[in-house]
Amino acid sequence: MIPRKKRIDAFVNLGNYLKDPIHSIELEGIAAQARNINSWFIPENVRLAVQKISEQLLAGSALLSFLDTYEEVSESKKIGVVMAGNIPAVGFHDALCVLLSGHHLLAKVSSDDAPLMMYLLETLLRIEPEFVNYLSVVQKINVADAYIATGSDNSSRYFDYYFSAKPHIIRKNRTSVAILTGDESGEELEALGDDILHYFGLGCRNVSKVYVPENYNFSPFFDAQASKMEKYQYHHKYFNNYEYNKSILLVNRVPHLDNGFLIVNENQALVSPLSVLYFETYSSDEQLSEELGSHSEKIQCIVGPSKSTLATVPFGKAQSPGIADYADGVDTMAFLRSF
Image (cartoon, rainbow, N blue to C red; front, top):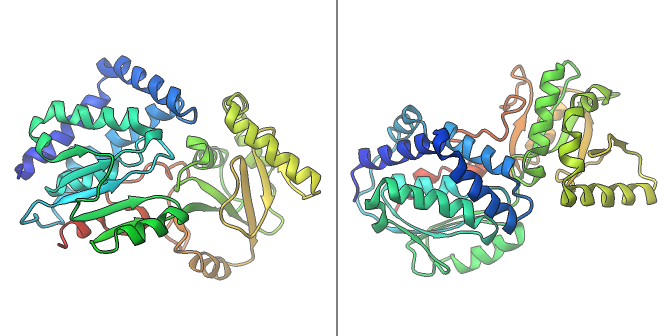
């Protein structure tokens, strides 16, 4: 097994490599490949994902304090990881956990995210060649000792059946919500727009619904999003979704608000279509807490004011999870040392 310090140093060096401007042209080439394969992965979003990885997951002090809370595993096992491909490098955190824990990663990389994930893994191997014995990119992972799989509610049923005989973590669809009080500044509302729209709303940490006080005025919210108009109006896939969803609401005479690229619609459902933000009103903190509690298994994070009695993420930080912000709240590192 590679010594723990050597593992940590490799990832710290990877973070430094990704932050170094000298490698920006290299990354732009990868971003172009990613966009050619998946038009949702525009270069701006690829750069954003890499920035968040280097800043939030690969800082030396964060990695050290993170690993200090877990005992070293006594034996290296083969861990199969089925990676999602909804947003750039979404499978990196699982890869990081498996390799930091001392296990052997069997990575089934999503075809939608192959250029960026392969770039990250291959760069890690160049930095620390010893990982070659602990990192395999595979098409099938039927020989693993344990599994981590991320997918939709439908694919999770397949994963549950296929991986039932081995230890596993199966992740299903999740979404995120926000709480507004009416006292937010323009900067906070603009930042909330990033929580909604970054990665075109395709991630589980994207806000798909806001809870607002009764008679809430959405005009300041829309004013704060004005600078984003060009980006979203000129992305053909996103704007096609916007025009389609708008036409459905108009044909069915459903009341809604619209700023030319984002639709706001009152709806009790949690998950909104792409380009649509649902809202629901609340009359008290107690009612809101009860409502969110009833959906806890479907909510990834809650964006809102720090004074909230609920555990909230600051506006603009939904897409900046820390290394210990596990998907679905399941401690991946604890799982990896449990067998």
